[in-house]
Image (cartoon, one colour):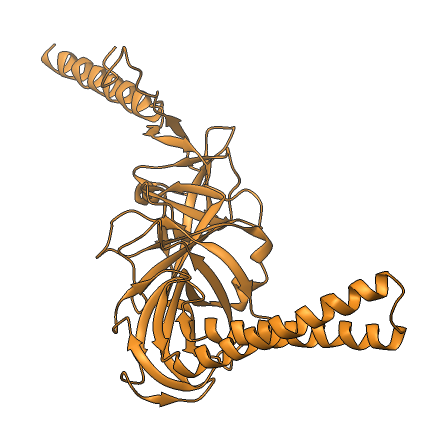
Length: 355
């Protein structure tokens, strides 16, 4: 009887074990939950940065148009002068005498010419005498005008507004006509010259705007205007770009300062994709992402990365398209064609996904 009981117990145990074994074989595979996000479109604008130096628009040499001794220098180096302001005065003694002589001769000839013209109107004088009188009057008028001009040229004025860079002669120095008495830095506008590579030069029609920054002056960028592009590259295969700055808008700027020039241009390659940095993983020196498929699996996709966008994302030059779904967390734990389940997005009314 005892033997029968033991046999029954052994049989029951075998059946129980077999049942347990069957239950284990029937267990479903664990599906990993993953966080996915759509591939977004990166900003189509790019910013290129180059360094440049502020230069004056031009340096003008100031010279008298007549010869003589300098009577007075009215400026000193570093002074700001406005267009039309007197810079230096020449001794006018000789030109006063010349003007007085020209004035007297003009008055004499004009009186004689007026008498001849009156007789001609009465038809009481030969035509030849009339022609001589009119020609003589025109000649002395020109001489008087020349004497007046030379008298006016004894004042040296600034043709444009700017700063006196250098004074070359002291007072009482005898100078000839055309000798530079002083040099003037034209500050009607400043210029900035930068050099850009061929890759940007061929995309110059895509450039939207230019701006510059001088941190020692201000933390804010200020606009600059395009003047010209060079048509020939330098020996370094760089093209020069001339830009213009309005000094009135930036009074603290001065020639010789270095500035950072920002060039904003549109991308010529069309829409550019971008993904979070967490979506990337490396294998064998290559960069991949996991792309979520419509059947619930993930597929490894090689991508070519570009520059960071500045918001925790990176541009993708090739490999994925905008609006494709990629895994953005736990990417190093997945396998090719693994079945996954996307996590539900966190809503404002279900913070933490607890509901």
